[in-house]
Picture 1: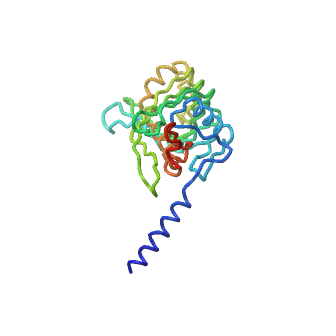
Picture 2 (picture 1 turned 120 degrees about the vertical axis):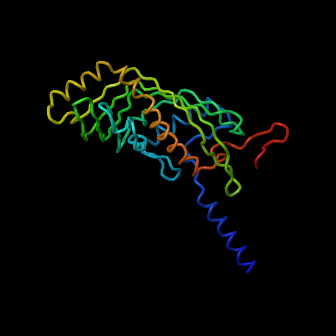
Picture 3 (picture 1 turned 60 degrees about the vertical axis):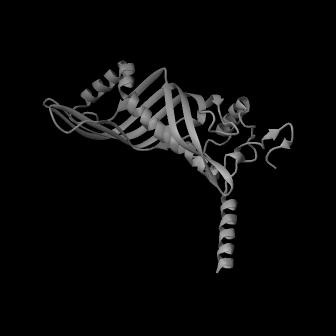
Length: 261
């Protein structure tokens, strides 16, 4: 029985090792902490694989889905309340992103937080929204499509990770992510915002776009939660499939040569 269990255990280890994903051969691997190389590699990865790489868990970057989001969720009572939820969230334009700055990714990635900075000329967000609410005698209960156009979109991700060991390899696990977003302009359109009168829908959309900065400031906390969830899923899927050490060239100690043979 002990011999049988040993064979099964070894078989499982071999399967696990064979399922470990690796970066494509045409993508340059860097030394730990080599920020210029990492910027170059990430931009090359985005440029070469806009449709993603399923083998390593990288989703399509030209059309990337975010989780459902609750923007407003007021209690259903009183003369003024509103709930606003977004589903079927699709973001288009990450394939045009340019990574501008990378920090971290040291030999021990837990010693320093990871910072990624990128910019996109345009990020388009399509979704379905469900809105219910009341403003005095005015009652809202509608569903429609929306589009948000984030122009000159800049994002900074500050990430903290822990290490997980599987099959004698190190894998990253994100336990905290903080996004900071800047943009030059936000253009929105909510279809079917007021079913009874299309002119009211147009007027409300025009008002949102005229006062876009105030509108963005009100929505920013909820949208940041959405971006946090979306970026966490994107990176975690890759980190889950590709071992941390397999992302980089073997570490070198000039006294003894390669640290990992």
